[in-house]
Image 1 (cartoon, rainbow, N blue to C red):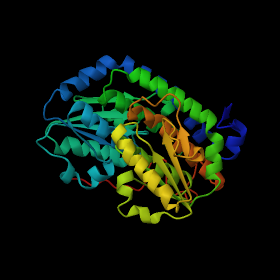
Image 2 (image 1 turned 180 degrees about the vertical axis):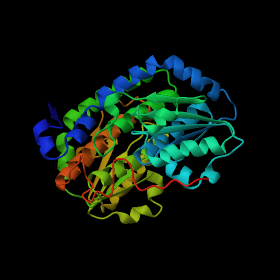
Image 3 (image 1 turned 90 degrees about the vertical axis):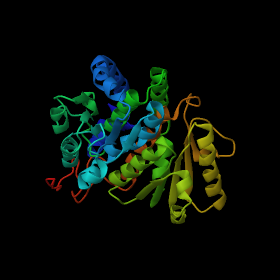
Image 4 (image 1 turned 90 degrees about the horizontal axis):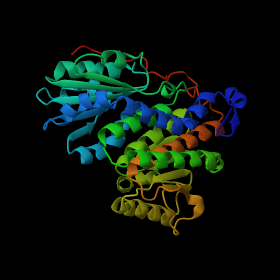
Length: 383
């Protein structure tokens, strides 16, 4: 079986088999995840609907690392769709400063995202929530049915939603686990009448991207930029953060990557641009937002200081040269929430090929072994 234009044998030799497979399998994972959610619809609604009907309910999306960025992507959309108080707070903040984030007298739904469900902060955040909040509800969205989060979400006021088994990535970097949990969060907290149609178009667009953009993205990775900036507005800012982390992880920090919003980038961070800098901009389909996105793209191109500017978008614009854009098929009329899926696949591809360009091992990128698939060395202290 081939993945990302490599044979399985070659990928094993490069220590990149699982990363390549798990990037490639995502369209299939998304359809399987949707089917699973539909099968559990009655149980999910019985748990969520009474909570969402509470006028003062507070919803916290949480997770560590990549899992935290799911909440960063979803919170802006969910807050608009549900009209509720919704916040994305990483477990790494909740655990170190629980008294500053949890509010005892505010009914709270803690939504925890986790690939393994065994990260110490994920378990501790759940425990602290139960201890500090008078009326605390727990929802775990996880890829591992044997993990601690899944086991602990079996009682009263708790529910675990398990992703399809093959989303529990075996590689170091979270790829299909991230996007499948992201899909679940959008399905549950960002209701839309056209969800199935939007996802179908995202599946088609991502499948074509995985077929057609391997060459261009591997060529771009071979240029070995030493700085990469991901920029996105609204839901895409969280995605930019995940994209930057993916590149840092897969290249073992040999390429420095960061993120910002297009408007925020002007306020100081723009100083990092030089001829060795690649800037990747996620262009929104929202008519207002895209004007701000394109203003910055035009400004950076006029400055002529960046090594390269790449825009990801759902339609082509004549002012942007073809070599500076990746255009998704049939997505021009879709909501930004569905652009998240092909956009992240693009970032994962670039991270994978960047690792290969530096002779790094995608499945086990940390040469020192000091960065692990499930974090180690965290001491959880009693309240």
